[in-house]
Image 1: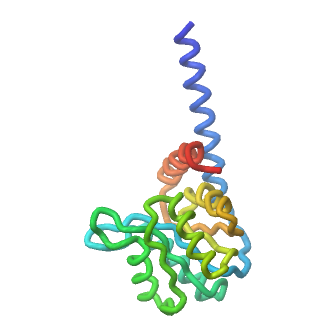
Image 2 (image 1 turned 180 degrees about the horizontal axis):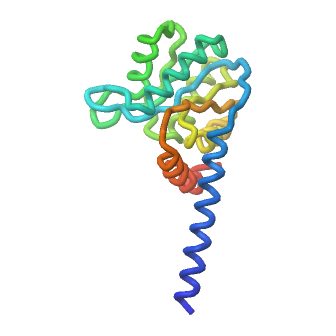
Image 3 (image 1 turned 30 degrees about the horizontal axis):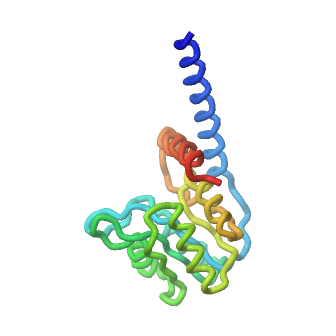
Length: 188
């Protein structure tokens, strides 16, 4: 009896995780028309020693700079604090963006966060101080649903934007599965 119950429970969890993975993946893969916003927000991502942007961070920053260049927002907010003695994700992002031609006066920094929850919490405070409420949120497609929900929960009007980083489908689905679990824990 216990074995049947355990097998049924594992099957239900597997189905829920599979369905959640597809929802997360589908949300991130959706193409949207974008409207002008007050700011572009770049979700933080890992910085590699000695202060080099990871592939994810580089793709997010490149996408944000392209959006800014197209005139979709006046400011770009880079989020993410320091980790293990490395420069903050926000500072590394800003340096990359400036090297790609972003004007210094367009850059805003949030350097206190260590998670997506913190990106939303502390990033929304930086935006509120400037009365910026409409954002284009740039992150990886698999991360968009949870990040969007967290920023919206902070009262922001969010247009999700995928960084469109090249990644094999099996890796996208693996990350989407991780995000499906994170949605259960942190999503709103």
